[in-house]
Length: 174
Image (cartoon, rainbow, N blue to C red; front, side, top):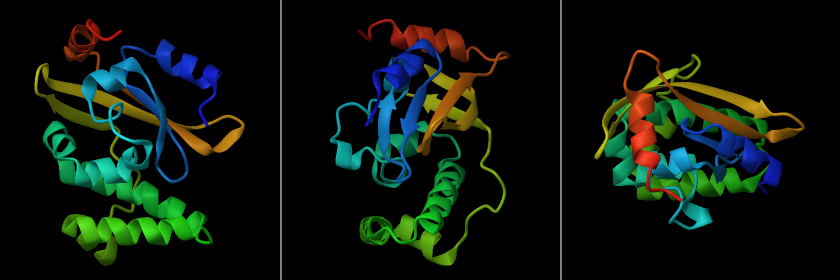
């Protein structure tokens, strides 16, 4: 459950796309900048608003993220850590089985363990269909007093035109 305080924090982070996900990688809150970058978050049902699901099952995510395979592996690494930490929760086995049935790429990466052993990449490049190339530095942290929540913030790199592109993308979002 997303608290109003956490939502206000996300809103204050604009023009940085930001979201909060739970221990199952379900996106429970996001800001307007995140909506501007990816139209996938808002209009879909909450059962599909999962970072792993979006990464593997939504074509627009594959087209948005430059070096998509590295991006997907990074999120799978995070997801695998949660899976191990909460091994008693049957949801993880059910979810990974479903993803494996729907996505051969997910199945291959998950079964072969072809995942990074180091921390995920902190600079990510997106190729937005309207704004073009944008570069962000990613910061992810645990939400204080909510051990099962993580906040992920995509901060525009200063030497790029990303911040101005984000402001342009957000101009029509109410």
